[in-house]
Image (cartoon, rainbow, N blue to C red; front, side, top):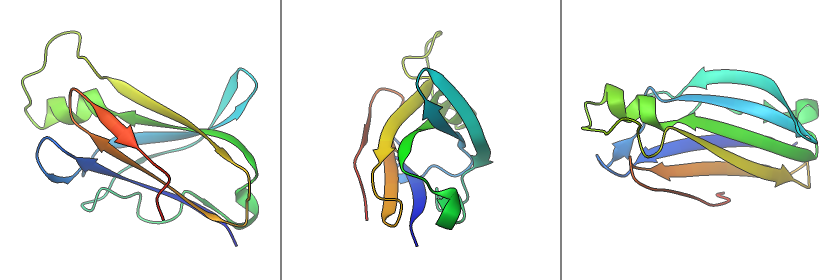
Length: 117
């Protein structure tokens, strides 16, 4: 049974990004269908799989991370407009029976991602 997970690490403060808001979309051509919105827990995670079993289908997806709001709430001195506001990560799921982990490492000035385990 495949499943999709994510987590975010705050590289500015060296901690999980607890309280960051995230949205998950399924992409169909130019259309993005919102599947769910959630807030990361104290460990910077969604608290369980975002999709699993029959709900996880091969295709294109987007995770959109509200980085600007998160760092503003943490009291970071940010310019207006912020350099990074909403970080969208578009990715593909080729094998719906596999585990796809999509982490984000973020600061107000940079981010990186990879396919985790």
